[in-house]
Image (cartoon, rainbow, N blue to C red; front, top):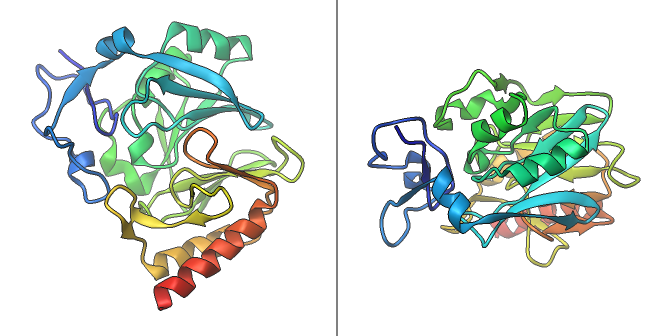
Length: 268
């Protein structure tokens, strides 16, 4: 039996005698099948060719694959009043990385922004002591490897503590999620945004896409819904999906300006 991992999106699939014929995550119009067609690897194979990079990213411990693999997101370790949270997930787990996290107090839960970053979430949960994985129920169909450790939440907000709230931003996926950390990691708080909204390359704005690799913009109605759901949350920083893709300082104003800029452009 093999736990296959898609080489394009990094999603780990359930035990099967052979690799699947298709990856529905990549065949969806928000992703893509690579130019060589559908290809697969395994966790053991990744261990032989990749390591995990553990480095500071704007004051937080970041974890990512080296060299780059699949979508190339990095996870962040958040020491919050809701416990130690692993925000986002990766296709590879290593003993060294788990040891570093355990030395810092371990992880109490995993929270993930959207299905493109589900990756090897069950592998990570088990390695960290079967910690819960929090996903929005609207994206339940995209889970490729089931586990009793997965906990689905519903509605537009899921409050984890006085200082930490998961917010359904929607748009990119129906259950796309951001994490709001009111008190950290710096004064003024932070928003952890994944892909909806996504911090763009100038690190002064965010943008909104149905599909990033296929350049399909998000509908204006979905962007307005996201704008309304994020209203009232204060934050000084936005942490994006990968290394250095962050807005550090005055991020609330940057996000507000980005909403107006995008909606104005879409209106012509």
